[in-house]
Image 1: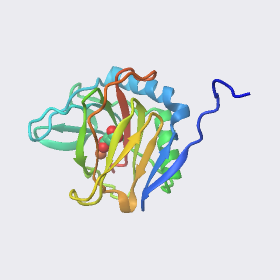
Image 2 (image 1 turned 90 degrees about the vertical axis):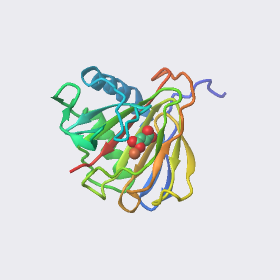
Image 3 (image 1 turned 60 degrees about the vertical axis):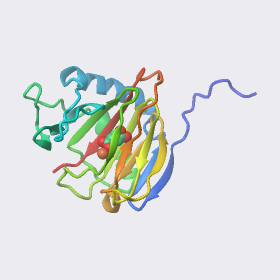
Image 4 (image 1 turned 60 degrees about the horizontal axis):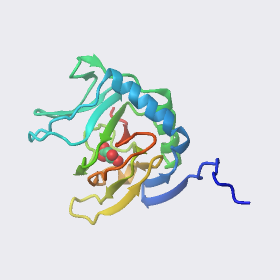
Length: 215
Ligand code: SIN
Ligand code: FE2
């Protein structure tokens, strides 16, 4: 007899994207509700906000941070700041569940002893997007970026090391994790405008955790 519900989570699978980059499908699935709860907890002390780019645009993605430093953007530029500029207080500390997941995913991607000092938390509502960019505000140029998708699915744009390189469109579902470092550290990436929807974990949004080793 075929059971109506399968209480065993789908096994995670690995899809190499290129040298130094891997998509770990379902890697965070089992921890996803804890990760969303912890993100909510962070946002209670450091609320999501729409940052301004140095060019004067308001970002469509709402952001907050946890960890020793947080990524911020304003008219002066992009930087990592130990204080939340909105409160002048340190960012909330990184939850253990975040660190464990990030270190486990990095190891599965071939990067041992990952010790991120920052986690940028991105919240996408319908229509929010992130243009193609490289993550280059970190001093560590080898340690991976670990990116965890929670809630609504998104189309992840995966390009190359030059902006003009062809771009692949990868659908990321809740629980998927992408790890890119070493030779793939400066690959251009982005997120296509989020399609409206409703997800059990996150309602009308997608939450993305992006871990970085800054120092
Ligand atoms: C980022 O590039 O910082 C976020 C990527 C994502 O939301 O998947
Ligand atoms: Fe990025």
